[in-house]
Structures are given as structure tokens and as C-alpha cells.
Amino acid sequence: MTDTFDVLNPSTEEVVQAIHMASADEIDQAVAKAKAAFPAWRDTAPGTKATLLRRFATIVEEHNEELAQLEVLEAGHTIGNARWEAQNVSNVLNYFAGGVERLLGHQIPVPGGIDITFHEPFGVVGIIVPWNFPMPVAGWGFAPALAAGNTVVLKPAETTPLTALRLAELALEAGIPEGVFNVIPGFGKVAGQRLVDHPEVRKIVFTGSTAVGINIMQSAAPQLKRITLELGGKSPTIIFADSDIEAAAKAAPLAVFDNSGQDCCARSRILVERSIYDDVLAHMESVVKGMRVDNPALDTTDMGPLISQTQLDRVKSFVPDNAPIMFQGDAPTGKGFWFPPTILAPVSQSDRLYSDEIFGPVAVVVPFDDEADAIRQANATDYGLAASIFTNDVGRAIRVSRGVESGVISVNSHSAVRYWTPFGGFKKSGIGRELGPNAIEHFTETKNVFISTES
Ligand code: NAD
Image (cartoon, rainbow, N blue to C red; front, side, top):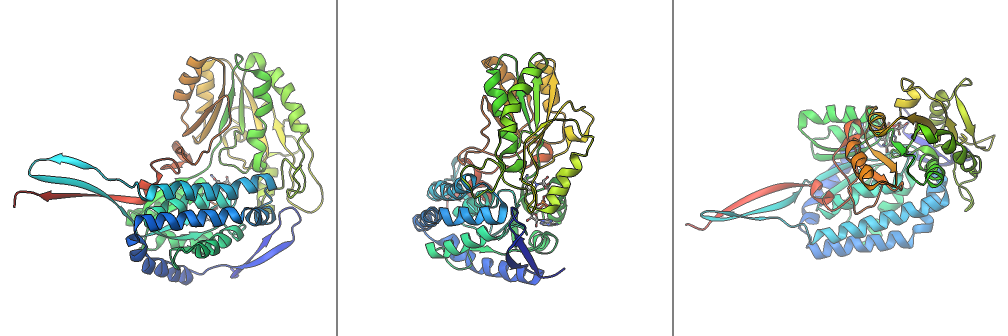
């Protein structure tokens, strides 16, 4: 394995930059640096920590356009999405900066003394980031980790290290002390694995494939290392006949094709009540065929390329020549990892198209018979990350929300992620929750202290 990786522009296949990939020894050095920086960061006054994180947020916001352009270049994200993603980092830093001074413990009534709890930081936290949302996923890990008083070693994905490296520079500019926030690019099997195995790394936050997530859980077990895993999905949109059918049908493709389908929350199974199946497909067709798949740097582009040749080959393998294509949009030809938005129907429930995460712009449309069948089908995969339910019946909206085994559900909407609400999955979609009011506590150990008043 060479020690450099060529970061490619997925729209053109041109090399953007060759990046040095860290060895296991270099990870050890980064962990040592983070460990050395930990006591001073932990003991920094809460108000000072909060001010530094807010300053970091401001500097990220001031560099929004630069970071967004970098994400277009390395990840092929549309410029609109990339600006939102950079802003998300800034918002998440501000949100968790507000938690530093509110990391409250309890005072618990006990006889003979007082009992109080503290939230103590772990020490060094390792964060392993995928390529699909390099900036937000990094921020969801490092912002609460730093706010809780930990230091961080973050390993970005091989294909998308550039924005994370820039964020580390901006942290220094903001006055976050050297060694507190370290970004080290490297291969998963070398640098990522070492981060998981390193005894001084007390918690791993991992976002990526379920297969690697399982491997991380196994590797972490002998040390009882704390883990948060945010893994894959095969999420449903469920459209009932009593919904605003046209609006639901037109929104459904966008919940799959955003970020070219490379989204763990992609609602790639569109479940439709049988009586409106044809109507829904008819409304969807104009949206899918009207999508502009083009240079992601253009403001007019709806969808860019896939991240890599590997990912393109994977997506293509799900759509062979005899695939049941209902309709397909257009995509550029020639250089770049392009795949058109594609709707497949009908698809049998035993087909891997129905159960496997494709992580590309491909959705299946499947009929259901009634509410019970909709819930059964929604739950008929190993995953349980997101779900969208379209109905105008409030009781049904609540019954189905409670019945679907997913961590993030939206009714008459496709929103999944707000940084101030919890995010994460049931079943093989992960363990633990990111974001929201409790996330900062997930970067601490609870310590209970009893003080006798009797001596
Ligand atoms: P991956 O799980 O291989 O990689 C994610 C991150 O983990 C990268 O930083 C990688 O370097 C690192 N990694 C890989 N092997 C590791 C190991 N043994 N120890 C520690 N770290 C390791 O994901 P991928 O190859 O980037 O994508 C493959 C599939 O994963 C996709 O097709 C998709 O199904 C899924 N995926 C899901 C998400 C999500 O947000 N849920 C994100 C990315 C990928």
C-alpha cells in the first residue's frame, strides 16, 4: 500500500491533490499529541472553552464559500448542498458551545451527606468519517467531543480529506490549542484500525458501512471501548391514499437523489398504497426526468456525480441491463462518475434491490395493501435509520410512527437531520445517538461522588 492517495474530482476524474496517508506510527504520534493536550483542555474554564468553540464557529462561517468549493471539488456535492454543509459545521459548533456551561450534574438526596454527579470527559476521542457527508459528519463528532472537554483525533475518508484538513487549520486560527483537534488522513485498514485499537483512545465515533461498523465493535470489545456507530440504511417513504398524493409523489424522488443517493437516510424504498400506485408513479416521472444532473459547481444543478469509480461500479451492479427500470433521468457521459436518477418498479420483496443499501440514485417503488402491511414492509430490512410517512390522518401518522423501527421519522416531510434533535438508527443502522440535547453527555463518563457530612 503506497503512502499517498490521489484525491480525485469526481466530476472530471482529475487529480485534485495527492494526500499523505498516515501509518499506524503516525496515528500513535497524533494520539500522544492529543493525550498531552487533554489535561489543559479539560481544565480550561467552561466560559473560555465555549468562547473558543464559538470563535471556531465564526471562522468556519467566514470560510463557508471556500469550504463549500472544496467539497464540490473533492466530493462532487452540489454547491448549494456544500454551502449548507459548511454552515452546518458552524451551527453545530455554536450549538455545542452552548453546552459547555450547561454540562450539569445532579444533586441527589442521600442520608448522612450530599451526593453529586459529574460528567467527566473521556480523554482522547477517535472520530472516523465517511466520504458521503465529510463536513457535517465530522462536526457532529468533534463539536460535542471538544465541548465535553475531550481532545480529538479525526480520520477522514480516503477520498475526501480536504475539508477536514482545512477545518483543523481553522480551529488553530480560532485559538483552539495545538493538539486539541487533530485531523490525520489515512487508509481505513491502517490508520482507522489503529485508532480503534489504540488503548489511549477511549471512545470511537464511526460513521460508515455496517460491515466496517461490526468490525469496529469487535475490535473495541476487548478494551470495552465506548463506541457510537452510525451505519447504513434502506429507509422507506410510505405514501397513504389519504395524503396529498401529488405533493408526496413529487417529494419522494428528491429524498433519494439528494447527494446522488449517497445518503444513509436516503428513502430508497418508496412504499405506496396500492390504490394510488399508478398515480404516484405518474407524478414522480416528471420530477425524475426533469432533474438536472450536471457540473455540481453550477447553481442550477440538482445532482452531481457519485464519489468514485468503485461506487459507480457498485451502483451499476444493482442495475443490470434486465433491471426493471420504470423511468430514468439523464446524466452526462464521458469523464466523471455519473449515474442517472433511476426508479425501479415493480420489485419483489425478496430482491436485494428491496433489502440492500445501494448508496446511489436508485429507488424502488413497491405497493402495500393497508396500514399493517405498510408497517410490516417498512420494517422488513435489517436497517432502521429514517422513514417518511405521508398521510392526512393524525392518528395514523402517530400509529405508523410508533410502529416503524427507525430512529428518525418525519410525517408529511422528509427532514431527518436537525442538529438540535437526536439522530441515529435502530437495528443494523447503528448504536447510540448523535446531535440533540443529550449528545454532549455521550462524550463523558458519569461520576458519582458522596460527601459525608457526619465527620
Ligand atoms: P467504509 O465503512 O468502508 O468507510 C468509512 C470510514 O471508515 C472511512 O474513513 C474508512 O477509511 C474507514 N474504515 C474502513 N475500514 C476501516 C477499519 N477496518 N477500521 C477503521 N476504519 C475503517 O465505507 P465506504 O467504503 O466509504 O462506503 C461503503 C459503503 O458504506 C457504502 O456503499 C454505503 O453503503 C456505506 N456508507 C454508509 C454511510 C452512512 O452514513 N451510513 C457513509 C458512507 C458509506
